[in-house]
Length: 278
Picture 1 (cartoon, rainbow, N blue to C red):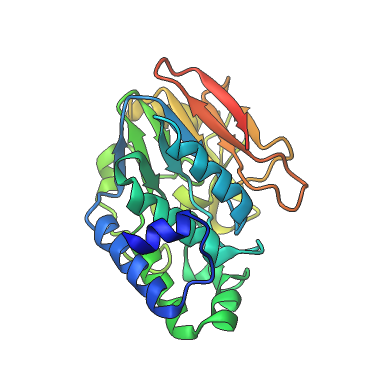
Picture 2 (picture 1 turned 60 degrees about the horizontal axis):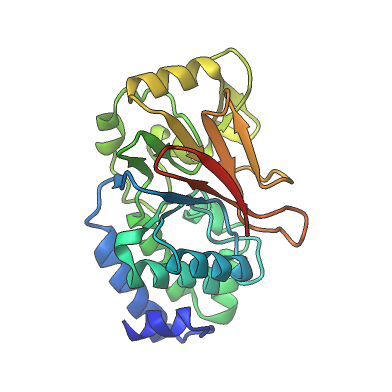
């Protein structure tokens, strides 16, 4: 696709018609996919939140295109950063260019209730129109919510949700909404881990969100027969942090204006985990 190729070669500030076209092509691909994507057993990159950081997005895209790794993006492409539209479109272009090697997942910021408050709505409305913001919301609705590799690596934006005992519990959710009306889906993009021996407790993030502890984590991993859990959502200064004896890896991939060391997680076919600075 010409527009995708132009973006990956450095084009920014697309016009309204170009954005609608590239989003339409991506929606046609993504809406046909299941809630939980099956990723290869081969080598994998996992990329955390980018939040409008086009510089990091370009570095990551270049790394992916010059490797044989499959890349899983864990959501939070918009809000807060200086180039939110261009960052999101760069990843969309990458997905269209090499669809078999890129998985896009949805974060909590890919929703109307969050992107409407934290900058994305304002950026789109200021530079384009309210109509185009609605096109972006329509794109957010079709993004899958989780990924499961054939080697037993589960990935989502947030964390372990309540009332999920099997893969079918996630696969049966209707994800096609501008927000997250299903509590399981909401918690999948909002929940955070705590290194404590409990199941779930209330979170400071809001009424639906939860902290999940070791008990919930072990049950989830056992029920779905998982070996590793990869997530994003929290900004740690070092860019990567592990929980639960290294079985949960939290990754963040934007510099936040130099406050964070942006990282990606590289996982080889033997499940060895490497922290890679961007």
